[in-house]
Image (cartoon, rainbow, N blue to C red):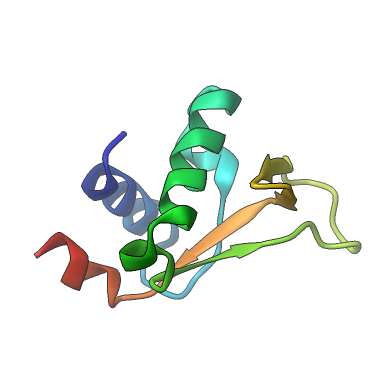
Amino acid sequence: MNLKQAIDLYLKTVGTFGNPMPLSAFSLPPDDLVNMIAAWEDDYHLNRHFELLPPSPASSESASFSINGSAYTAIIFRESILDVLA
């Protein structure tokens, strides 16, 4: 999945920038998902435009993925990600 496809899916799923989307909503095999997000996180030009959310102690509903040594369950994209796609 490329970045544009991921952003399109994100907006279709959550409606607007700034809302959390479960990482499982990408519907990718776990290894592919982890590799994709890890590459974004390692990219200086991309990682400023999203936030990964750790598991919440209050909720165990979302699947947790280990990305670059930390556990995450959701992602929030900032609208500024559109500058990267332009």
